Image 1 (cartoon, rainbow, N blue to C red):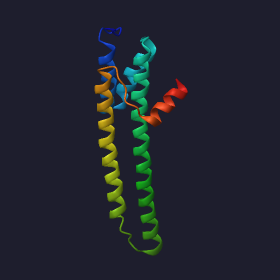
Image 2: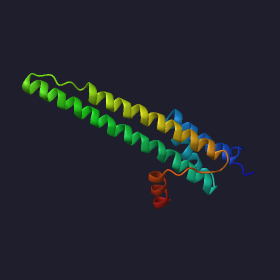
Image 3: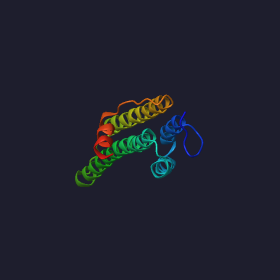
Image 4: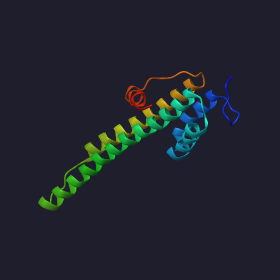
Length: 137
């Protein structure tokens, strides 16, 4: 069983990378940086890049939702200032909140699934992320 320089198996380290993505991007990036700089195993390096890419992918989706939410708020303020009328945005805000919650659940499920599959050195395809990794790695 192949081990990292830290003495733990590459499977456990790979799973840990995905699980770190559930907590915060900072420890994930630090751990992925360690892998890319000091570990020679190609599978583990690919897992490190994929874990960071998945987290960044969801972060971009959340940012786009936030942008849409901010734009609807700006529209509301513009209408309110211009016409002295209030626009009811509860439906739009409710939809955005639902999408945000659904994305959060999907992110957790994807990272958990990838983490548990990494314990067996298997992969789960994430098409948008895998294509980007294949093109750039």
